[in-house]
Structures are given as C-alpha cells and as structure tokens.
Length: 242
Image 1 (tube, helix red, strand yellow):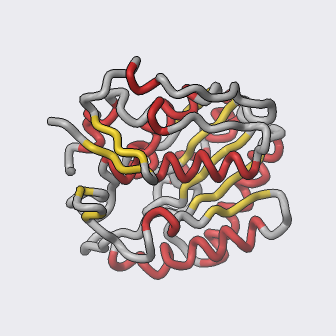
Image 2: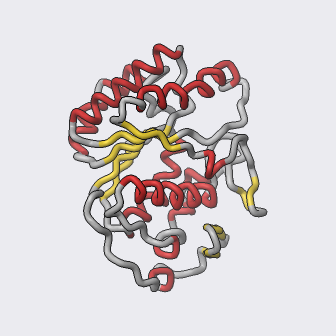
C-alpha cells in the first residue's frame, strides 16, 4: 500500500525510490552535532524510525533507547530502567539526549521533579545536553485515565527542572495540537488506539524536531524530507494500528 506524507509544501509518496528522493542538492552538515540519543516510550520508538533515517541523511549518528511499555525515568518501570540507564547514556557518547515525556511519567510533582533532575544530572555528567520534548496528547482509556493529572503536569515540571539553563524543553504542540487528532490532512496521523503515531505523524514530528535541533545547533543542517521520508520505514510493525 502506498503511503503519502505531507511535510510543508512537499508531497512525498512511498512509490518514490530512494535514489529519486535523494536528488536534492544540500550543503554538508556543519559542526556542532554528531550524535543524538533518543529516550522515551513506545511512542518515541515509532518516531525513532524516520528520525534515524533523517539524521543519517543529515550526517548525524543516531541511537534510540526508547522502550515499548516503559522508557520512563519516573513512575512505574523507572527503578528497573535506572539500573542500566546511566551506563547506557555514558556508553552512547551523545552530544544531545532527547527525552520525550512518556505516558508512564506518573507520580507526584516531587517525584517527577526528582526523576527529571536525576536525568539532567546524568546527561550533563557525560558532557551532553538534555532536551525534553512534550508528548503528543493521548485519548485516555481506563488504563491512562487515573494518571492524566500527572501526565498533564509533567511538562511544567520539566520546564521547572530546565530553568537552571542546563536543559531545554521543546513544546511539540506545534506538531500535534492540544488534543488527540486521529486524522490530519485527510490521512491517519495518530494510531486508532489513541496513543501512538502513524507514519504521517512520525514524519511531521521528525521534520519539526530536526529544525528545532538546527536552532539549538546552528552548525547542523537538516536533510530535506525528500531524502528520508520514503525510505521504507513506514512499513514497520510500530505502525500496525494505522
């Protein structure tokens, strides 16, 4: 099945071959960004697929440790995650760690603050920059409904932790809007489960994040969407709910 992504004014189809989609001439990436490490839950794991292609096309190394059913630094599963997380971050040798707030970031304000501060200390301790990214809005079911107050509070707590100047918070509402939206531009943007993203949404998120990173790292030149949007990643099982 052919999937179509709309990014700005660029219309891309999966029928386009990699070679044909790579004809755009771009300047080589400048210094300042060599490796990005992505953290988060299964939403981020899906977004990692186009992000890996886009950063590779931009001359930047990428690694994802986003985890299906976890990946959080506060709330359930976080104690287990913290057993190995510092070593994984250090061994990755990133310039920037992107932590997309997860659907498991449950807990009180104090618990969230402690988890985010611990992450900031860990990331800066290896000489990297921490970038928090707000999660896409979800359509809560019985599993998530008891925790929505915590999830709604999480961005404000992340901003509080970042206010020291050692971290950045990116508001992804520019991508997703303020509420869950299943269809955008006539195509599936979010999964039918009310949580995950579809290829179109993941591609839009990737395009947005690359340009945000270019603002933080002026020497970084993102590849155009023509070079990465239709390289086969959209067939991954992460998008089966689309």
